[in-house]
Image (tube, rainbow, N blue to C red; front, side, top):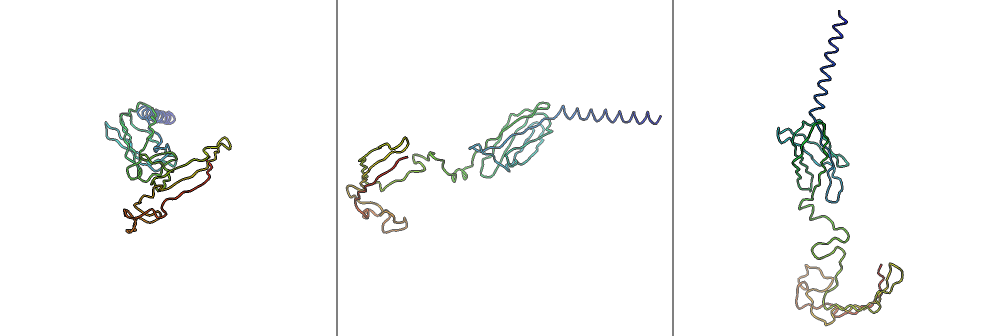
Length: 209
């Protein structure tokens, strides 16, 4: 009798456990993804929050070292994903509907906020306005560039040039003496100041590669 009773209790517990497991499996889903910046680099330690827009249920986590996040055992329904990180603008994605046992992948593209973008360095060839990163300007007063020998090819990628550059060919006045600092009141923006060295002619050879 005791054996039958023990067996009956065991079967009841086993059935209830199975029903609970099936219930959990049939009513939950997950959301995972990676947080990236504009250069497709991962963003670790970003704060990611999921919210069920129907019930208000929320859960929050931090991205790992690879920029990844993962929410499991989420009740099915409609969700929104919010991501935030230092120096980045807040990101919100809506319209995410979780079905039974679904693993929704939501990758998050973060954009640099105004302050971060202001101090971001320029990539080679990138321009701000009409000025490139590697532009070097001369005095800019009547600059005459004579190419005596232009683009003589030495190898497939190397060219030779012999040049004569004439700076300030008409010896006009300058608004600041070269190499002086902008705090020098005697020279900076002084219309009576000359170019210091007056007109200059520079001969030189150049390798272009």
